Image 1: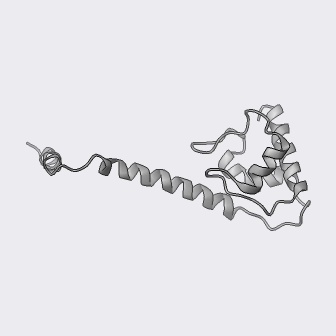
Image 2: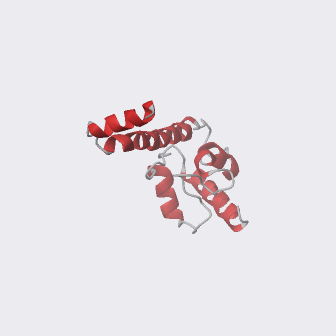
Image 3: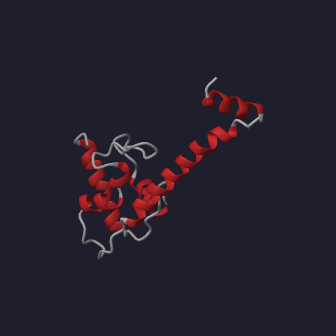
Length: 126
């Protein structure tokens, strides 16, 4: 019998709980969320309100998680689906949701330019 097989039998004999095998997966998924939040928040740009275009705002605040093509990746949803009403879009940007951090520093004009850019890209197919 190989040493690996003996090790596996010994672990089973000790009655190792099944959750121990799932722990690394839970830790990895949690770390992915923390990394995504770090990347989104470190991307914040100090700018005068109204000085950035919708595209620049998207690149600086959104593209790292939602991807440049709006398709999203992994735990980060794509933005090509339904159009989000302006009020709901503003709330999502200012308050965040799930893994998405809040960006309360964006003024109404910036949020509107960002929403218009996403809507324009969605209509154009990404």
